[in-house]
Amino acid sequence: MEDNELLNDFVIESKEHLADVENQFLAIEEKGASVDVNLVNEVFRAIHSIKGAAGFLGLTTVNDLAHSLENLLNMMRNKELTPTSAIVDVMLKAADTLSSMIDDVHNSASYDISHHVSALEKIASGETPDESENPAPEAPTTAPAAELSLDEQIEAAINAKLAEKKSAKQPEVTAASAPAPQPAREKSESEQPAGGKQQQSSPAPAPAPADASIRVSVNVLDSMMNLAGELVLSRNQLMQAVSSDEKSGLEATSARIDQVTSELQEAIMQTRMQQIGTVFGRFPRVVRDLSNKLGKQCDLVIEGKEVEVDKTIVEAIGDPLTHLVRHSIDHGIESPAERI
Image 1: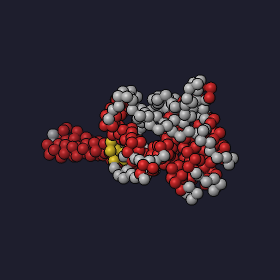
Image 2: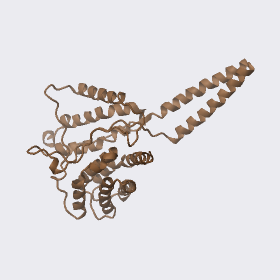
Image 3: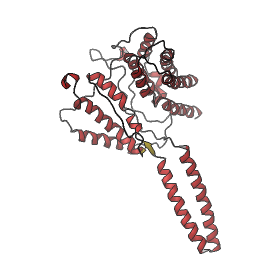
Image 4: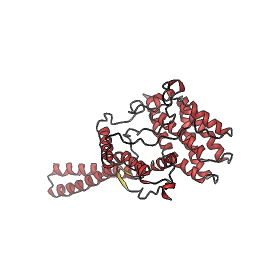
């Protein structure tokens, strides 16, 4: 039980560390030779924390991959390595696999990270990244013969997401019971089908299952504690008024209970509110990878990230909006040649 609790804490903390790493890598890529040491340090600290905790828990595969990433980040912050797009691409794909292993922590040892470690070590030794070892993510597949309209595809994605949440049986997420889809495990060459197309070593991550945990502001928790205290006080006053048959006391106490319970309900609802920016955060990587794959020039501008909506809505619209962004790049943006 204690081991499961430790693993669960590790998963939660590691996800927090990785939450911003992807976009930080993209920011590092954009800076190029003008290395932002503070930004690199932030990523370094996140990966270093994961490495240390993984080593303590005996998660050797997670530890090894984090260590290889950490080495390159250390070179970047010491100005020994310029973060080119090709280098960042290798690091992003390694971070994808690191995230997948953390999501599936009990099976992390079965992941093949050898090609990631090899690619990272080659960069550290001064070699240019080999595109064949780190293929770009596949472009989104086109719809089958009976092609659905975009609206129908988005509606289907929303319904599937809601059905997934409805069928979830465990209200709590623990490292031992966290439902995870079959991981996109890194296959060795011996596992590749003979004569068939070799599978991508780092496919785009599959949509993660809805997380039953949620971050809550300390201020919101303090407010709920205060309201709960007032509710207990009002209950005691109500019981006293009933026992003494004081009608005036009953009316005043009832009014106070009504007010406190309404405020408590609002505070509880507030705990479920999340900034919609948690959904938008995945778009920069999607736009980067797909525009590179298709040879298109795209700029992503995000507004309104601070708007708060219920956690259920955030989870439900993530995949449909991602599909919409992919569809827009694939079919709505011309290539440079077509624009001319």
